[in-house]
Image (cartoon, rainbow, N blue to C red):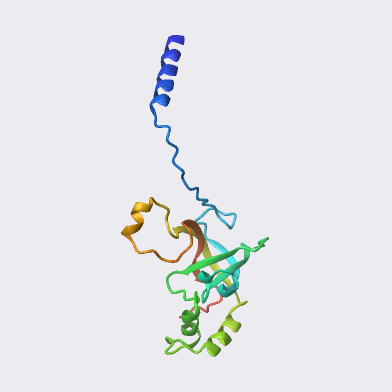
Length: 178
């Protein structure tokens, strides 16, 4: 038995010594739920519309987000603000263009800042009861060796990261049409 352990130990030491000692820096990405329920859990939520212009980054401008007020009837502590995607026949506005279409049931023909600001004022702060689940995706500019930079044109974005979002399955405020 001890002979077997000695041989195993020698193999492990030899294997470790033969490996490259070059250290490669690797970025760490946190993939974690924001709602304290596993990803993909269908939940009833109360949400409030937040103006992306107030989020402190140009990338959020002209978009809308949801501040989670409660999940399954329980209030959420803190300030959980999430992006959202519509599914099926859900059409909650995610940006100014969709807001215009949501209100007037037609595409916006020209940009009238005063009218859009007025529409935003009414929409931001609105609350909805929804059925949705939390999911996520990787987004942003990936890290890579500099010699690969010539393969694509640079774009303006955040660094590579994981972002959580809600996939809306049902708008409970919307009346069912028969």
